[in-house]
Every structure is written in C-alpha cells, then in structure tokens.
Amino acid sequence: MRPRLSPFLMAITQVMLAVLITGCAIGPNYQRPATPDVSSFKEAQGWVPAAPADALERGPWWQLFGDPVLDQLAARVQVSNQNVAAAVAAYAQARAVVREQRASLFPSVGLDGGASRARSSGNTATGADGRVGNAYRLGIGGSWEPDVWGRLGLVVDSASAGAQASAADLASATLSAQGELAANYFSLRQTDAQKALLEATLAGFQRAFEITQNRYTAGVVAKTDVLQAQTQLANARADNAGLVRQRAQLEHAIAVLIGEAPGNFSLPPVAWKPSVPDIPVGLPSTLLQRRPDIAAAERRVAAANA
Image (cartoon, rainbow, N blue to C red):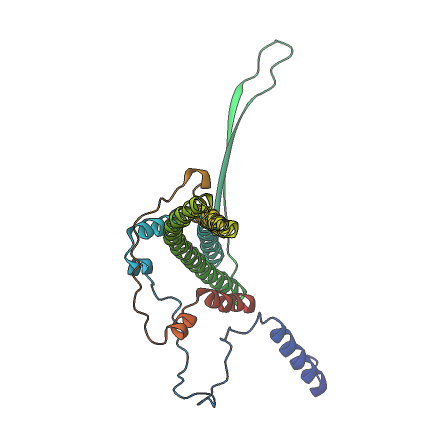
C-alpha cells in the first residue's frame, strides 16, 4: 500500500510549490507612470490634458524663414554633423540588438565542416611509402530555448524600448543641431547688419575728427574738442573689432555644425532681408509636448522595467 501524506504535509507542499512558481516570474508588464488627473487649475482656466506628439514629422521647418543659404546649411547638418552621425550609429546599433534578441525566440541551427589530408605509415621492411588519404567532416546541430517564463520576451521588449529611446535621441540631436545652426546663422546676419551700420558711423567719425583737427590747427577750437573726436573714433573702432571677432566665432560654429573645418569654410556677407514667420497661438505648450528627449526618458523607463 502507498503511504498517504498527512494534511499538514500536503499544505506545506502546496505552499512550497506556490512560492517556487511565483519566484520564477520574471517581472511585471510595463505600465506608463500615471500622473494625477486634475479637472481644473486654480491659477488659470482653459487648461486641457496633454497630448504628446513627439513622433510628429516636423519637416524642413527652417524653410519658413525663406533664406536659401540657411536651407543649404540645414540640409548639410543631417549628413555631416558629427553628433547626428553618432546618434544615427547608436540607433542602428539599437535596432541590431532588437533583431539579435528577437532571434533568440526561434530555434537556431549550426553547420560546420572540415577536411584533412594525411599520409599513412609505409612498410618499413620494403621501404614502400604510405598512401595519402583525405578525411572530410560535416557536423550539424541545433538548439532552442522555449520561453516558458517570458524572460526572452521581456528581453525583446527591453531592446525594443531601447531602440525607441535611441530613435528619440536621434530626433533630439538632429533638432538641436538644426536649431543651433539657425540661431548662429541669424546672429551672424545680425552681426553683418551691425557691422555695416558701424562702418558707416566710422566714416562719419573719421570725417568729424579730421574737421576738428583742422579747426584746432586754425585756432578755432580747443584741444579738448580734438581729444573728444579722437575718443569717439577710437571707441567706434574698438566696437568694430569686437564685431569682427564675434562674426568669426559664429562662422566657426556654423562650420562645426555642418561638419566642415573652420579654416575651409567661409560665409560672405550678403544683402539680408529677414522674414519672420507667424507664430501660432499656444506654441510653447505645443512644443513642450513634442520634445523627443522627454519621449526618450519615458522609453528608458520601459526598458529598465523590462
């Protein structure tokens, strides 16, 4: 007769089985962190829930300014900027990791082979040489790990979330480089306009100094008038030198953004007519919902959870 377990031992056995099964669980499914839902704000009325749109295609937004030189420079950022190139490489690597982890869900088959050539030992009594023979080897093997507890699936989910975070990083790096290029370009054109105005002012100060010097030589004005005119001219020249240095720095920054050596890049002054596009109402809040760096942070939370 088979011995029967006591009710106490049966209860202990069931508890231990439950603990073992629970311990084999890999982890909880990812849930996006919830935020408190507020129906109204006491500071202002008319607030609405956020609607993230980080995946929205932005397109060539710099064309709204109607500057062909800026259009050419912005197009080179996506191709030659080193930060964008690094983000592209990181995104390609993340996608490769996703493919690698997804491949672990399927059976794998390996095939290898080899060949060898050897001479057998001959007859030492007769002095006959041994025969030369070829040996071939072919091997095939396979393996498959069933995803019983969902571990492989969660690894794939983690890799997918990491790839999505890399895609958001790429969008953030591209948008940052393009925005910095536009800001530097407009600052350079503004510097050109200030420099042109200052050069006209320099010509006037130079003429005023010469007139004052001639009047002092003729004894019409005092020496203080000459010194004052000379000081105005020197200050204007110092301001002009500062603008020249500022323009060179902006030109070098633009060269770095488009992947050019500053010594091989130049942006000559041109007649510039700024065109400011219309700004939609509520633009700051809309841009806040389209920030790719926030989407990248949320995707990394999902990857860490998996």
